[in-house]
Image (cartoon, rainbow, N blue to C red):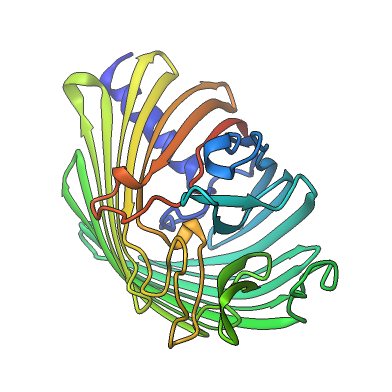
Length: 402
């Protein structure tokens, strides 16, 4: 492939990728209507006998279907439609307990969880000179959860096209209404509400004709019911310290977080390839801090064919109220043994192959995610037995109408 053709192909890929979530807003509408579809098959590894203290237990399987439509209207407007549906089934971590041998095990919910989630988002972008304004609305619904959100984003590119400044914000109002409230002891909570607000500022700098760098900072605030209604905690009975009881997961009713990201896109002419390097730092008032580092290599291997290997490393500290197992009552009354709040690290390896055939862009991808307490930068006092490993197989296509 000639260098000019290579750059043209990569530019076409970037334009098509702009319809995907979390991609920076383009500075002009698409020249054509684009329709996309993607299917993901998510499979969690079975919980082991050593983790549960019982026979191996199957965990979550999720099928995800995504549909996307990019619709330009004239030379100044563009509408994006995004629809996603998920079908999930299996078992999830319920609570931890200490067995007679002194080891902490994970009790599972049993293979009774079946649910479907539907997400829909509509956004409108308007373009004027070097600026873009996008507003959107979204709805998410499942058997026990409803979320409604609004969002807005504005970006401006300098006259010399070397810098782009952007600001975005979104607000969400959600309702949690657990199913089977009285089927378990203790009973699950009644209908609860929560709200969240986030904002992000970013600056994108063109370093040279082959390199772009972006720095961004964000703020997230959540309040309301932030606990997990389907998780329990095994604690010492405050009325009889010789006994233990189960209570519902209990977390603070507000959460404030800050994040900082850096993204670099570097096209390497000699290799006809592009290197993407992303870093994110996250910190919140629950004392959870995390680092995410990801690298992707986009390699042209033949005309209109490319292969994309990737690696991502993630590490986080535990929240200040999390424990794998509670030996005594906590004064603050916050309790959670959720593995997602524990100290751990994770490594994700990915490989994607894609090709452009006429108006079609087709891709096939695979990701392998493995987590462990020893992978984290902060050593866990005790690994949570509910830590998950999973694999994702995905297939997708995008069609550009003439």
